[in-house]
Length: 212
Image (cartoon, helix red, strand yellow):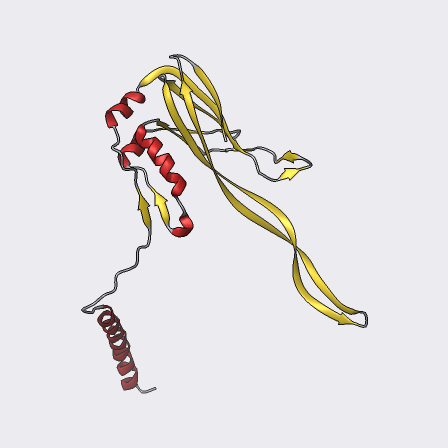
């Protein structure tokens, strides 16, 4: 290739790239730009959250809430329910029970992710909470609790597995048709919401709960 042609190619390549960028920018710029659709239905409690009452409910006391978090598969094995799956290192959240929280929990029954319908807790209501982390056997503790009514929850992720026969094809012989299958392993992910209302009746009381 002649030296002049190489120089022309070196000049033309950046020009072509610049032209493509300008054409792309011109295509994105217009008088009318269609907005993205947002079909999400957002539901909020209508009541007013009482921050003063929530702050008072979370003041320190002398009680203790001790618990173990676990789930149990629904399938039955020889007439028994599945083995316990303990919540290993999950976060357990505690809220003081207020009229606002009760309205939220009732409204949450209408939540339907398939229809893009979601229920939200106000930032103030979410701010007034306590958190604990379970150990490998699902145990957790909330110390220094004063008498009152509380709601605790956690989300436990787990999976199940099994085998199925996957069809791989058919063969023909003098006796007819033979279908062939291969044994395949499958896994299914699960996410269980663990929740419970807890009452601390007396100052200094130790309440033991099963969060499931």
